[in-house]
Length: 196
Image (cartoon, rainbow, N blue to C red; front, side, top):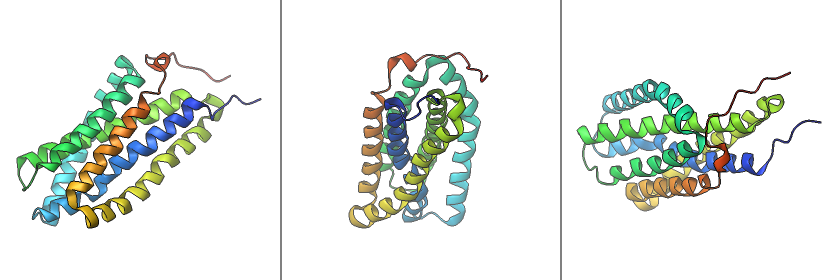
């Protein structure tokens, strides 16, 4: 008999991933904000290129932190950081160094969150059902990638960019509250499990 996959912890992890990814996927509309500030296509490309590079370079540090501080703490800290790193955009009113700083910082946090999400999902998934587990878990994030841009465009149309960034903050806060449901027992590094 196959070990259970759809446990309370796994479904909670999917919910954290979905809500957190809704917030993170607002990132796809950041070029609209840069354009509204007067940025050109070149400005947008350079800004997002630098931010993405910084996110990739930071990944090894994220892996080390996951091993050192544990999944629960990283889920909580990352979710809080996601909310906090959206907030400065509410105060950015022109192109300049602060826009670059906060875009890079938020990209690093976003990359860290996805690494954390999938590390935690792998921890929860029985080895013999890992492909199924990661596929289902991945759908939670991919669905958010489809929903968030549409939702974000509607919010920008109705409430402007202040409403857009505030929504991203609220979604990150909800993901943080859900992360509090992650058991403390799963906090520290776990020994590798081998398949037989």
